[in-house]
Image (cartoon, rainbow, N blue to C red):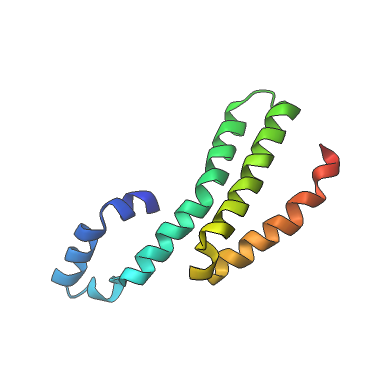
Length: 107
């Protein structure tokens, strides 16, 4: 749903400007940018969830590939400076980096 909203920012903003009842819901450009950063951050998690849910019998080899992909994504976001612009994403990513490796022994 948020992805659709991001595609229609101009239309949503215009509606909020035109309708006095909707004006209280108008978002600032910074808020739209925050949503875009959040979507970028969460996209790999959504893809892994969809892919794993579609498999009848997930294999260890696919889990390792997905795990490494998520860890690479967290590192990539850190190097691209996404966390500097979004404090709560930094907290989430750091929590992921701390919690996820604890489960490595399971693999």
